[in-house]
Image 1 (cartoon, rainbow, N blue to C red):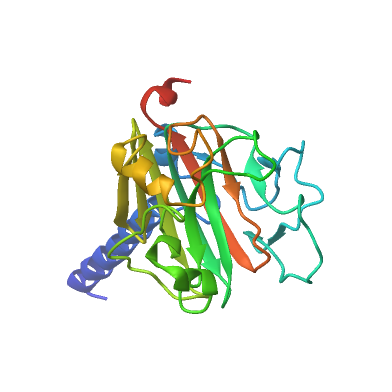
Image 2: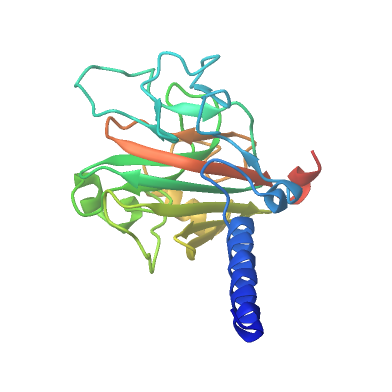
Length: 249
């Protein structure tokens, strides 16, 4: 092998190594955090192995719920028709008011679920602001209108310009709360922005199913909730960091 050839091969190997290392720094394995994310204050709500960070609504742990862990996914089996009221949803053990939450999800055909935030345990049912997760094409609730479709603030505000992927495919979502501003993201695009306790929000809530919940629409130090609506859904890479004054806790 000539000197010129040897140098060319060495250059290619070096470039390949740099690309490989860069890719490794940019993307962590599912349900893990990069060093940069850890330094930025991110923490996992789900590690892909246990439900230690979760519990049932008004319960001490997640036992008795239908949630399972399969291949690094937090998932639900298809409903058997059995009444599981009171043993469906799970909430984070920690509470959050201002935060940045990211998660990946898939929904089964015809499925319905959601991720709620600002959830308090002051009602018989778990009530909070809901980032809607649903099969827009097939589930009847989505046919009622955009305010009940994916990435909407459920029954209050619709999302717009949504780069949504269909049932069975992976979607990435984000909920960002800073001060009184809340933003919903879908697959990297901001699709909704609203202001807590604003005249616009109060008017929308007054027309919603939550009109009689006095605290609804205001900033709350509450739980994150994953909804069991009886349909198959999959979640992973659920990570959160506190923002604003909450970041100093």
